[in-house]
View (cartoon, rainbow over the protein chains, first blue to last red):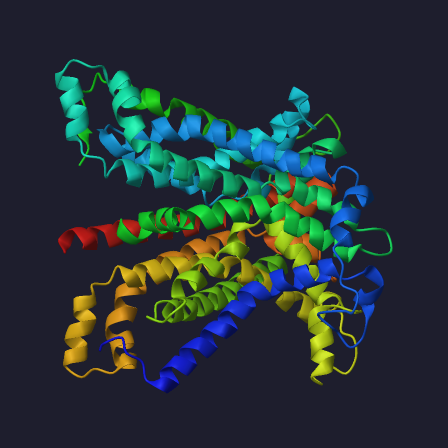
Length: 280
Length: 296
């Protein structure tokens, strides 16, 4: 019927999709093939994706080439988790306020938070660096967690607000009529119902925090043990050569946590990311 | 829409305290402080003096106008490619074909993973000695010998754009796909009954209806691209010979690599000026679009 394609349309669509997905996925496939090849075979000309002696050795070797590799991965997960928890403590009440209450300055404040999305960390880095220096918190997790938190708040508020707005308001009205206070109503009535939405926001926040912890770590931290993975991976870059196969292996292992989270929850994450701006 | 609260009700304000405090400390105050620093000669030395507009004068007498022009050129190309590739991808993924669900899931990874990790992979592909693109180029006879993509001005410039497009396209695709799926199928069916071709329906129904989404995404991705730091920094650090030095990179180099906080701050202020212009456009557009929505 309407969606029936003629044979050449099918061919065109699949050819187009093949091209599109090649562009998207080729780097990942390349990284995987590189991670499976021994170093000597990587420099062959003409270029080959595969070599005779493919091996998982890089996945073993990398832990001893960069002794702190596991630590970097743990650091990344720790920093992202901390940002997620701190972020939620700010996001949840703020999103509830924006979703449910009319108060003076509401639009301005919401716009203010959204405007944060447009500021780059690089713009703020000079005063932040100076103040962290004065507070003596350079080279601590704190210096990476606090700035990171500010940058996950706007999107979090936006996502959770649209979720909360779908919860019927009668629930609160009923609770208030029964004499429950506003804080009690929020914590005991609304938040339990909103838990699925909060979980999605938490995961989206974690993924975002995991993805964007580069510039603050690069600038505010010079203690090797505290580095998150993106900065730690620079250790595979030697003076003369880069240990490409191990770098690729470590990269792929490093992105596994976020990819797994994404695969399990992609439906909600995509819906959440796109809901805000398409419908409002 | 929301509950009306009496003027004496401080509850919503209490709820906003944590988010506001963090934002004030990490974003608002540093912004103000950046403006102040831009009028000083702040550096590693503990003393700083007020120098008026000296930093700004110095900045513009040097090669800065070139940096601004390059930033906008870089941003425009990158955003155009993202929107075009993203729209095409969304159209293809919107087709009712077997396997579409899986393919939709496969689009997102470049946007989900930490940018530096994606960039390391591109670093391998751009490598001249043995990198993938140079290698394939030679195999199919496009290149005569090994080609170091990041070593020459114009190839480095375009290489950083390609990587930026790779990272930015997924969100555009998924966002526009969602906009397309929000279109009521009745419209397409009615046009189909009237004998409208697939392309005609795309041009006259789909495209006008996703136009607001395309506009929103263009502006948002312009802002993000303008702010793009990780990709250029890791691939080229702004080189070769400044070919990829955008405003963000220039600011970072001046302030953090060369410790000229005052001069760096002046550059940061210029970035903020441009960002405020973008943001103004964005909010005007959003409020215009939401007004239109209410009329319908």
